[in-house]
Each structure stands twice: as C-alpha cells, then as structure tokens.
Image (tube, rainbow, N blue to C red; front, side, top):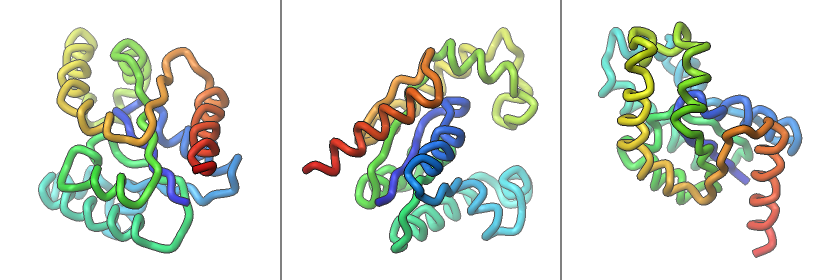
Length: 175
C-alpha cells in the first residue's frame, strides 16, 4: 500500500506521515528529501541554480519513480507537488491520498514560528502573511481536494489526525 499526504506548507504533512509510518510499520519517505538525495543538492540550491521549471520536472520524475515502484510507504510531498504537471493524477492512480486541510489561521500561526525555515514566506511580513496564505490556498485548493480523503487538522493532536487517517485507510481496505 502507498499512502500520500498532501496539503499546504505547515499543515503537518511530514510529522503526520512519520507518525503513520511508525504506527503501521511502513517506510516514511519525504519527496523533497528523496529529490535532494538523487540530485545531490538542496531544494533551495536547485531553485537557485537551475530554477523552478527544472525542479518541477525532476519532482514529477521522482514522484513517478516512487509511486510506480513495488515498495510500500507513506510519502509526504511538498505543498506545490499536487499542483504541477500531472502529479495529482499520478497520485490518484498509484496511491491512497490524504489532504491535511488546515485553516488560514492555523497555517498562519504555525508559519509565524518557522518563517526562517520556509524560503517561500521568509521575506513576507507578518502583516502580509495571512493574505499570501489565503491567495495561495485559493490557487492550490482545487488540487488538494482531489485527494481520496480530507482530514481537517485544526485543533487536533497528531494522534487524533493519525487515528482518522488509519480509520479511513482501514475502511478502504474493506472494499
């Protein structure tokens, strides 16, 4: 089984995927980490030296590589991954996907604490951050909502979110 966790930055994709992996005995893969390993440079460096178009091409190639492999895993992907190329269709064809749906307020609160780690929002003032998130979410929501399941993450613990995903995953196993 392959599970893919999608959602906007700071929605909790990596931490939820990691916890799911631990609880279910699956391997956890992070697409950005996989790209960095294959390309032998950081995502930031790829963007800086080769540009976003190059990055989106390799992102698509490595997503296909992982999802068409025989491995079973939980994969967390970047916030933009489902929105480019035919990535959401690849995810739909080869995996069960979960959209971690966080409100603008939740994302804003989380991003304020970790802006320095997020190149996309690092230079955006806190007063402009909510508007940036709202516009970005509006553009990306259509792609995220194509996931098999949506899990609202606002005011929920990691364990509550993982339990919802496990319940949905187990319900799917019955069909």
